[in-house]
Image (cartoon, rainbow, N blue to C red; front, side, top):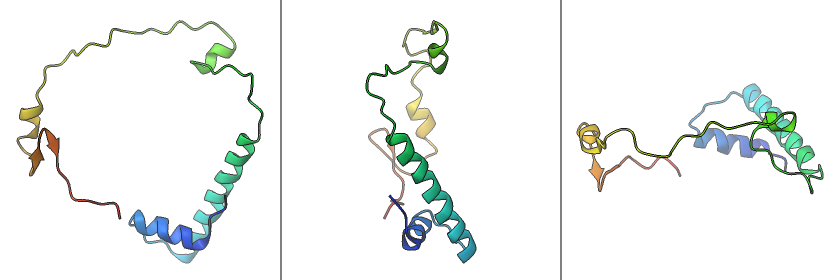
Length: 99
């Protein structure tokens, strides 16, 4: 997958960035380089490889320190939302920012 200069312009517009021509060209080169690396990684045959829970697990046994998944703080939703301009059913309402 290779990006075009038009793709960079659209991404910059969506991110509300104003890029110069040289910055746009540099971004195009960097992002296409990133996608090239991703394609190389996808080409590697990983069938039969067991996923690791932790990167160190490949060289030594790892005992993960897990705790019980219990709420330890009281629910203060109403108090935290008092300063919000608009709240609906416990959710903050914000203006739409994605086109």
